[in-house]
Amino acid sequence: MEKNSSPADFLARHGWLSFTPPDFRKNVLARIQTREFRKGEAIYRAGDPPGGLWVLLDGAVEIELPPPDTAPHFVHLAAPGFWFGEWPLIWDKPRRLTVIATLPSTLATFPLVECRAMLEAEPSAWRWIALLSTMSSDLAAGIVADLLLRDPEKRTAAVLLRVAGVRSNVFVAPEPSPINLSQERLAHLVNLSRNSIIPILHEFVRRGFIDVKYGYIAILDVKGLSATISE
Image (cartoon, rainbow, N blue to C red; front, side, top):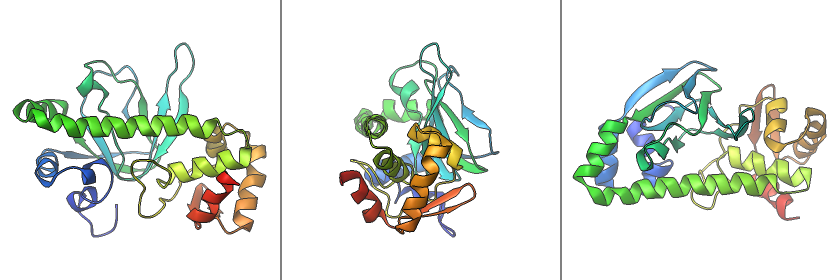
């Protein structure tokens, strides 16, 4: 979240809530509750009881998907403005994903009971929950599409752009978010070894597409990095 920006101002300009009408947005913002999480602390885990919506205000969270009978897979790193957690609202089942803070992070939650009460009072607002679900489906499709890119360089570029918030069919962030990942964790997302991804990152640095520091990557040239995918 930008300095000197309130959660309401930030959420009115970033992510799902920025697409909704002012009255709906106002109702949601009046009900959200802010919480702080330590690095490594779970917002919730797969199998936890149903809960409300969440949005990342500051920091970063990683999304883990536990396929049947295997260990959880790290599938996405989310940037501020990312909303998640609508599954129990649509289908009253336990949590499907695990979400963990990868930095000291500030999040806000829209409690499940509050959300249900608002939707019962205004059934037309379900349209905006459907929009959030569509955005989540678009992200899931994007994750799959990125990993199906056979060329490691193209796959790396696509993943970098996605986790920076600038590769989407629904919402593209005004500026790429910093990527707070080690090279080893990024390699996991790209489905490469650390030794395989290092020369790719060095080449992107040489071409001026990114800047790499310890545990941190910044995208400097979105167009240039995007062009490598279509080359």
